Amino acid sequence: MSMVRSMTLQSNNKVSGSKTSATALKERTAEIERHKAAIAAKKKAVKIARGKKTYDNIKRTVDIVGSAVGMLVLLPVFLLISLLIMAERSGKHVFFKQCRLGMGGKPIYIYKFRTMIDNAEDVTRWLNEEQLKQYYSEYKVEDDPRVTKVGKFLRRTGLDELPQLLNILKGELSIVGPRPIQESETVLYGKDKDLLLSIRPGLTGYWQAYCSGDTTYTNRKRQRMEIHYVLHRNLLWDLKICLATFGAIVRKVKRGQ
Image 1 (cartoon, rainbow, N blue to C red):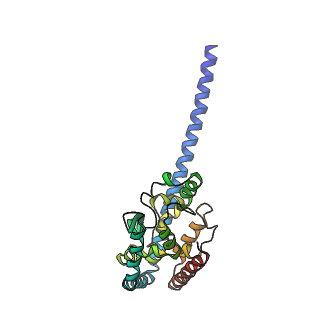
Image 2 (tube, helix red, strand yellow):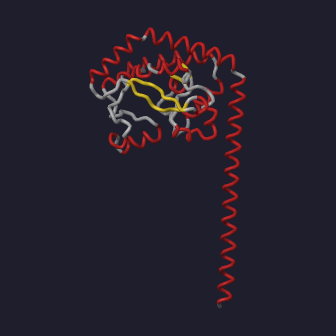
C-alpha cells in the first residue's frame, strides 16, 4: 500500500514539475517577445527621427522665436493672471510645476499657473470614489473640486499653460507635440512608449486639439492619436493643429466648460 502511495506521489510530482516548466517556458517566451517589440520600437523611432532632421531644425527655430516673442508680448497677461491668483488667496504660489517626461524619457518640470488649491495632489482627501477611479484611469477629473474659480477660467481658456513658453524656450517642449506624460502613464503605451518619447512633447498637440468625449486612455484612442502624430508629423500639420487648438478653446469658452 505504501509503495502504491509513493509511486502516486512521484507521478504527481512529475506532472506538477512538468506544468511548472511549461509555465516558466511560456513566461520566458512572452518576455523575449516583449523585449523584441521594445527593440523594434526603438529602431523605428530612430529611423523616423533620421528622416525628419530638416523638419526638426525648422521646428526648433520656430519654437525659439515663437516662445521668445510670446513671452514678451504676453508679459502684461502674465502679470494680470498672477494678480488674480494672488487676490483669490487659494494658496501660497502663483505657479505650479510638475515632473513629466521629455524627449528620450528625460525628466523635466513643466510650468503652469496654479489652478488648484494647495495640497491638491493629496487626491484621496479631495476626490470621491468615482472621481478617484476616473483620475487613476485618465489622469484627469471632470468637475474637479480642487480647481479654484480663477483656475476654472484659466483652464477653460488655456491660459494656465502659458508659463510653458519657458519650457519651449529651454528646449524641453515644442509648440506642437504629444502631451507630456508622467512616468506612471508610460505603461499605457506599452511597446510604443519609446516611440512616443522619441520627440519633444508639446504645449498643444493632435490629441489636445481634436479629442472628443470618447477619446480616452481606456479605449486607447488617445494613445493611437499620439502615436499617429509621432509617425506622420510635418510642418503643415503642426500649423493646422495650432489653428484647431485655438478653435477648440473658443468652443470651450462659448460652452462655458
